[in-house]
View 1 (spheres, rainbow over the protein chains, first blue to last red):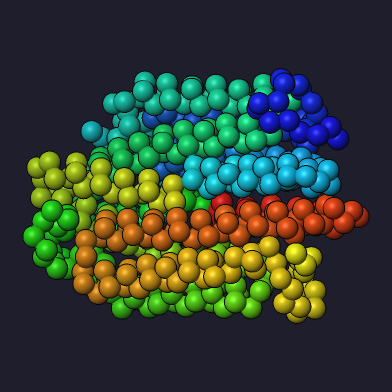
View 2: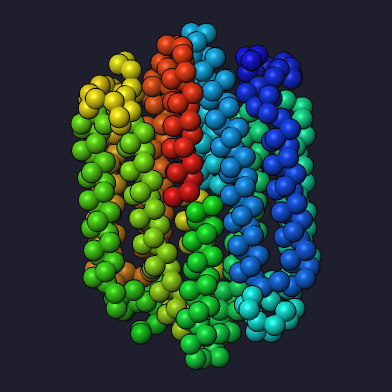
Length: 107
Length: 107
Length: 107
Length: 107
């Protein structure tokens, strides 16, 4: 698995932790896209507010599950590779991953 | 503003609290749909994991904002109307709204 | 049930929606206080990090449950009373309750 | 930094990632304990519901911050050490850390 590159790295589409499972991730995202279109239909059809809110929770949960799978692969590959490589890249990788979790918690 | 009906009510597309602002809600949902398609492009282009997670947080936040606006209109119309009408419908409406908030918290 | 007063109202310890169930709320909060002291013991005894994080989730969930019960009573009494009273106090009460839910979602 | 042990390991109070900063963590937890006692006083004094909910959000945020700091140290030490050690312990450590994040998201 190629080492991971941050934004400031050259725009190198290096394979990342999730790359080996790309099709599964894309399938999950297309399903979430369908859920969002489903919400649009509910609003167009004047569906009861609470039923729409229930579907919003389902959409948010699906997005969080996608994020957790990406996080697991990032930890397993990008963060673990940085630990094995040695040096202080691991500190940056761990801080970056923790900040991403903080954003997920606060969204 | 027509009284709100639960799922078991006849499929009566009564206007609900959000109906007067439908176009704004649909616009918001179409933007979220665009964000989800943006996530698909990022996965296809092997973008760095952390950048994708950052966009997931933005998408989740946009969904939560849509939910909060719908909740506000539901409280202002459906719940307030039930209070004014009197009787025990208000208890069911309040329990239902609180359960919807609980699902949002746990998603 | 006395009408609810905002912070800018005279410091009037009016009974609020939750006042009739005060002892149950206090019992719940004392249990959460015990959970936080339990976390301190775990840190003092060098318990494994993941086990501590599991207890943090339990504490957060207990706090959210307390908040949901308070919210339900606030909606049932403070917000419903404002709707019955008429006038524009209901708009402020609904906006205030929605903002409180937004803070819970983002914490 | 000693390797980390899971629950089924012998009850070995090995130092963990957070051990070097124990006093700071304990100070944070004592402050959160004080916030929970503050909530009890607010309920006893019939403070306005929304003001109590605002303090609940502050308490939840403080708990989440404590959890994020513990997670960062766990990733930096327990997970990174497992990666350097080689073998398949890293898979279990990453899965365990991701599951802890999932519980935090859903609480």
